[in-house]
Image (cartoon, rainbow, N blue to C red; front, side, top):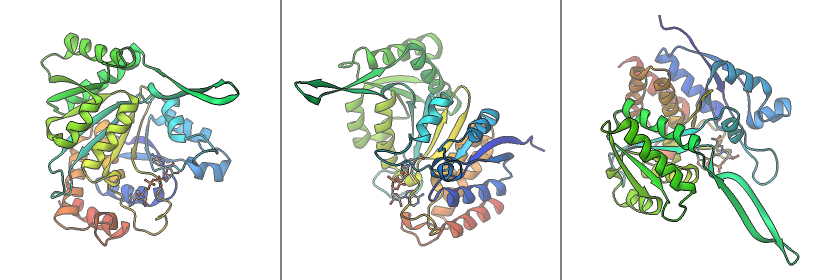
Length: 343
Ligand code: NAD
């Protein structure tokens, strides 16, 4: 018997509980050995305890070091700070992994299998911003400070290079803008090149590209890339671009990896417009669960899960409304579970 693996489960807001239920039924069918500790966050946390990230949830993740998370609602403008950003900071989740793979063939971009690794804690994204007042205009100048550190670059690059080897990637491309931002992104580029020379040479091919050229080439010929590794802001933009190549955010999983914990989630939000209607597509969270299985070194189970998802969508042609089908969340999950049980 496999040893139980303690893990925190955050159903989240909106469609969160619906897609989390679908994912749990599927993981049960796979006999995945997770021992769930159910916790709340986001709007659910505010409603239950006045805190979008209650202490009990943080304590649970600190104990299990592993979490599966449904989307959390964040009010735009005022209100509370994003619990997702707080989780990233709290557990130093320095690497964001966003795989993109064509699941339903026949679209504009077929046979895509790409991984984006984004630095998650530094760069121009960290929100150190302020205005400068000139001649009575309090907003005469807007300023932002980006910070990259050698240590921060090194840990995400090392994680990416190790992941490339573990998952059999042939080529890693460092994406930067060191021609203009010579210090901020030059440090990332230089650290990556040096790390490759010292420790990884020959284990995979290393390439470099300027971010604007990368965006163009991703649209013209995405097949030339295998794994992209980049700083926070560029990674934010490119990972959504790459998700667009394979059918949008509904099929995009994400993993946030840190020294102290790893949190797995769907990339999309809480979809309040369809919450409670039983029509949400659970695929992105299911694919996040596959990443989680790989993380706990159950790669065969992850492969079985991905194959069952592919077969349900492409052979059984059971699809939710966002993919042009007519199945609800429950019918899709039932078909998926029966795929798993019947091979
Ligand atoms: P959204 O991703 O929730 O929804 C965008 C559109 O995509 C909607 O029409 C929605 O119905 C559809 N959609 C999303 N996921 C779907 C699914 N699984 N199946 C079928 N259709 C799906 O984006 P939004 O409306 O901008 O954000 C809503 C809330 O989610 C906001 O409060 C936002 O802050 C939050 N959010 C959370 C996360 C997270 O927790 N990781 C990520 C993004 C947004």
